[in-house]
Length: 171
Image (cartoon, rainbow, N blue to C red):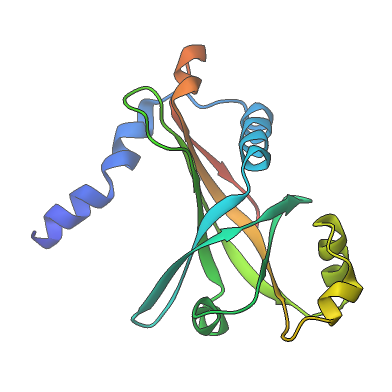
């Protein structure tokens, strides 16, 4: 592909969606949070320099933030250099008119083990802090603050809205 062909492909949905009907922000945010809470598994994309990693992980969602406990892995090599991440949550594709999924772009931070914030996140997941202290290694906590959610839900069309919606958050 030429540079221009890449550019055209990259802006395809932005141009196509310019005339689409957006949902009320409160209504869209409520629908997005319902979807987030109805699931618990995501793909977390991290990257730095030429390294890219996409890791399936369990998450918790609380106070508008995503919380992920992890033993470790290569994602931490990228997180050390680049706090920008993308989470993907999605349903199995069952054909046209049945698409549901979202991409959450945000920033990640590592919470200090056994800090007040860490202990609250563990309690939310019903993991006793004492049990965490007995583990042979540290269970790391990643906190992700969303900056943008792109939510695709074919059901939105039933109410006259575009199936592709976007929520922007203040950094």
